[in-house]
Image (cartoon, rainbow, N blue to C red; front, side, top):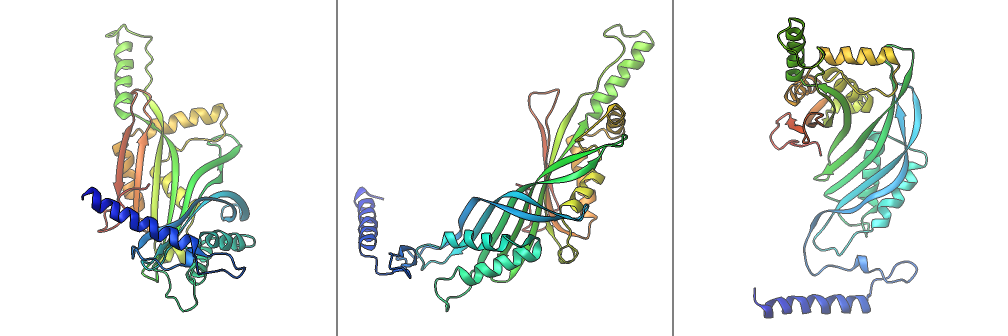
Length: 328
């Protein structure tokens, strides 16, 4: 592209913008210039536009305790922009959510109702067609009560979660849950070599050390994203249910409160479940694939190594054509 062509495009854009800004013919109900409603001469559509990091307190039902708790959330609210339009009414995205959140408890019906309202109220004129895409996503920390392994204690275990609903094509609505689950992983190779050393030391074949070797273990994480089946939505499959599945796949979940008996029980649990990141991936694969509540899934797994300065990592997913391939 020549400099002359570039300058021509730049000057055209500058002139159009200046003229529209100084002579905006579209006004709102108060008489203020409503530049957002001007028709666009660019004829360029935008698949997703809106707001993110909109902070709002939202209420959630905690199934295990049968209580409703309020959580600080970051909302992402996106719609598509049609090629003939200049912009969207972004403040309306926020104000509608604010109004619905005052008395509403977030669930799949709440999200569908919110999407329906965006469909209706994000139009500039009553005769406009409905939107092609609406995305509603809430990021928050969700606490669950966790009983100690042995002692009569409990603590709050927090999970970084995302609840997302996406409508495409005007009526295709999908719901997703993401949970970051932390657990402990003991390296089976390190564990095996530690036991090998201890036996050799007892036989007097090795003089190094004091006869005790510690297998390397580390805090680990499984970022899991699932798409819900219709049955799951109807039965209100939620965060607690996904955490229960992850506890089956990866039973060495980190603990929120421990006494000495709990610490010993945790050591025993880790010894009974040594795993590479590959083992953890396969465990998750088997558990999530067996659930009738999950239509699709993807998991990013990471072991924050205590042996190495780097981390062991894996990504595994169900493998549906056109489906999820990452959890983030």
